Image 1 (tube, rainbow, N blue to C red):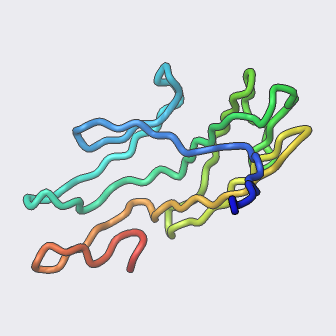
Image 2: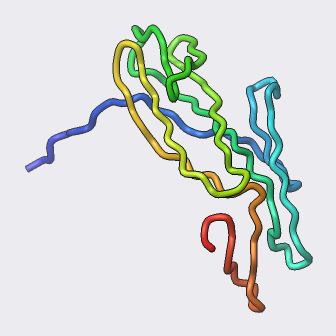
Image 3: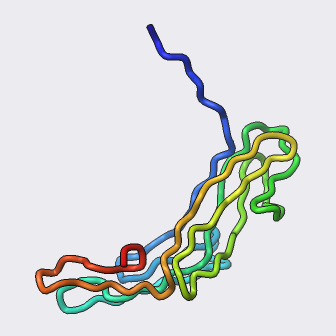
Length: 140
């Protein structure tokens, strides 16, 4: 017996970021506008010691149909062209790690909710004598 397909089509969204090989990650639009920079440093053993963590999350996705008139992300109007949408959210991760909620609502249509985790900014990394990671912005 084949299982029934119980999939429900929901708006899709994801975080986006670009990186280079020199210790920086950069995010923004395709022309490089509205970018933010995340840098890290490493020690002589090539272990990360500290990194900047931006509080920005780029929410991008595609609507469930072409008849969607508007998309809101956390109750704010998102940019919408054809079926693609985009909205930048900012969370305050300056003193503690943050688990933020991302709510996407199509008008008219479907809604979905997801969580995003951002480590504390800056995020520090600690190692034991054998080089094993013992503490970071997620695990204390």
